[in-house]
Image 1 (cartoon, rainbow, N blue to C red):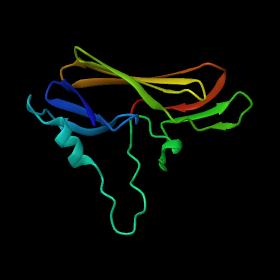
Image 2: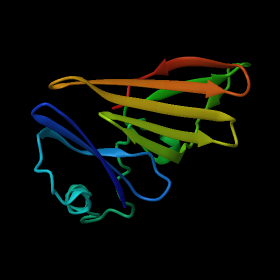
Image 3: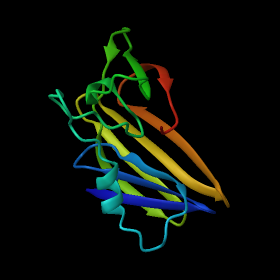
Image 4: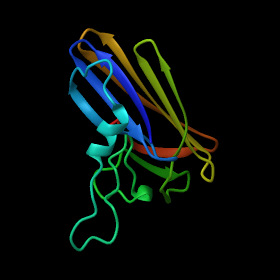
Length: 148
């Protein structure tokens, strides 16, 4: 499990990812102590498979998608140039952590798509979140949410 943290004033945002999945928020609230065990925090936030469930619940990543098993509001609705629905499955390609910033990058090589999110502490206590989509071929973008 990989974890990342960004602090803004009195709050902390902690993201975690297992394998190639996009990161999901495991904590967004009061500022955590500097030595906090982020892997333990991420493990405690993981939903268990319980009575009668055959599969684990899909994580609500920064860009939840039907291709990942997410059944709620998607972070992205996309169609081909001809209008056919596209269901990307993004895989994490990198995370760059800077001074008060996180840049998350993912791609769907089959569809030729690259998704990225930027999270920045812009003022004490304020985080700015943005998302970007790039496509090798023309697509129709119906919906692109800021990171969830």
